[in-house]
Image 1 (cartoon, rainbow, N blue to C red):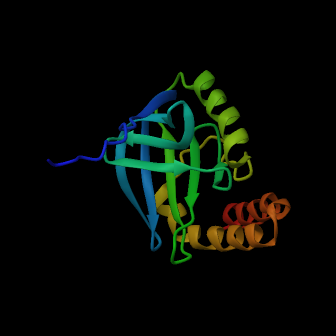
Image 2: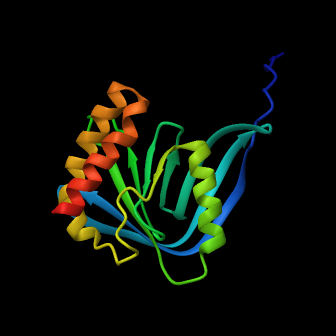
Length: 175
């Protein structure tokens, strides 16, 4: 007679949609270049296991998503341009430029800002472009300088992050 060990119940992860904003474009800043990764709806999704929050992710397409963490730097350059920077193992962060396209995002972007203030290392308006179009291809060569300043600020303590962002933003604007 064969005995089988009871199988533990399988857990299913749930996803909770927190915010959805239509029409955005995402660029990856890589080696001084900006590569368009995708266009679609910007979604903030909370992943839950038995109603316990595990993670929050940003999802734009089925193939384009990244985590949002409390210590992840997010900079709002102006009313429709955001820069997300993710630390990776080799020390060189991944940076995503997100542009919200079209009009009518006001309330949604205010909700996004409120969420980011609470759930990320968020700074708003420090690189203000005066709501002009941000050319991510022109911005990309300076992203390494931005990430270096940001990495030093994080290593020195979170109180220095905003100061580092201001320094980098001022350098970008003056160039």
